[in-house]
Amino acid sequence: MTITVWHLVLPLTMVTLGRYFIFLGTLVRNRERLKVYLRLIMDECVDIGVNSVFIVAIVASFIGAVTCVQTAYNLDNPFVPRNIIAFIVRDSTILEFAPTISSIVLAGKVGSSIAGQLGTMRVTEQIDALEVMGINSSSYLVLPKVIGAMLMFPLLTIMAAFLGILGGYLAGVFVGVISHEDFMTGLRFSYNPFGIKFALIKTEVFAFLIATISAYQGFNVSGGALEVGNASTNAVTASCISIIVADFVLTQLLLA
Amino acid sequence: MIEIKNIAKMFGDRQVLAGVDGEFQPGETSLVIGGSGTGKSVLLKCMIGLVTPDEGEVLYDGRNFLTADENTRKAIRREMGVLFQGSALFDSKNVFDNVRFPLDMLTQMSEDEKVERAHASLQRVGLENAEQRMPSEISGGMKKRVGIARAIVMNPKYLFCDEPNSGLDPLTSIKIDQLIKEITDEYKITTVVITHDMNSMMEIGEKIMFLYEGHKLWEGNSDSLPHSDVKELNEFIYANKLLRELERK
Image (cartoon, rainbow over all chains, first blue to last red; front, top):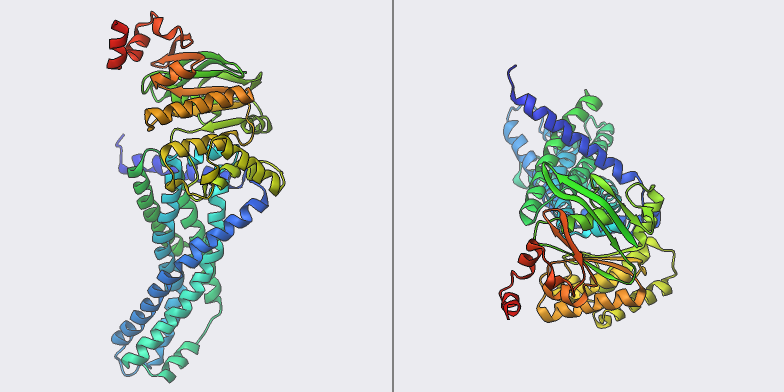
């Protein structure tokens, strides 16, 4: 029998997936008292959400601006109305850029931070210290991060969508590729409110994937500083891949 | 009392522990000694439940820790205090909150009681003036003392110390050893110390167990340690040039 790459990769993937799902199970089994989590969740909301506002705002504004200018550059046919530019900026920002690009940026910022933090706690025996006290360390450390991410990511996405469109408007009007009136007309043209729901559903899924995959990578580190660094890198890589795969699956399921 | 019976553990095809037995009595400081990689820390991890042995039993006052149900295991864990090799203090909490943490998580005490208990523990290790400092702002010796304070804040019946002297100067090492000994005597705790520090062996080793390649080769006390006829143990304790010279004289 010929051994192909799949014969080697598939079992490894299945083992990793199995371990990941077992890890997810530990988050909800033998939980601590609810009161314990409330403060931790608030801390995580600040850490994950409030501390990410700046980077998400910058990225969203500029992506909106670039989308507007590039769309204008490609739509130089006089038979195509200029308000289409705003229509494209609105839909691409709400449906794709705000949820997906923001999540990829957050995978880099939040994902690496979660993996690094948990990995360092693992190698410095802080997680062992929790286990020895009889505390469910995965639930205590990871569950607040997952809930915090799922609470804050949608808010960041809403902000990103708003700033993306605003960035598109400012760039379009100031560069002179579209007038204020055309932009407003395009913005209101053929609006489907389901787009917002779709973006928020995607964001919740991405938040869950980023928080749990990064936590899984960090939580299972063994070794030292080098392995913690590798775990952070793996967390970002795996989160980004899972985001784009989930993006495709969700688009097929909800929009096709 | 803690009893370990026939503890065996393999990592892959490497036998790390091979049928280790032992008894650790209350009010006694028991030392597990041996060179690096002989299975001391793995034995400790088997005893405190961080590693599951392939074979054997760990009994806490007759309660089998490995086969006990979740509630019994939790109850036993609450009777344990552990000082980790690197102290394992939580970076995000200050000294006081580190010590108070087990009380917050595991007890229903009132706020005043928790504060009082945490203060008392820190006072016991002489760190009442460092309560508000972060772990990154204190020395290695102070971290060990905070680790001890956290380990004793729940009034444990069993105290485990993994290499309490690692990374410390000889004088601080002696202070930490003395503190462990005093606490053991004072609270009548069953204390198990993993070490390869010769000074600790002579100072606090009421009972000493020597591990070599996963096997228990010798058991005795600090008085009988220098007169053993076990070749591996003699090589271990006289590895130090100064001790070799003293023995020759």
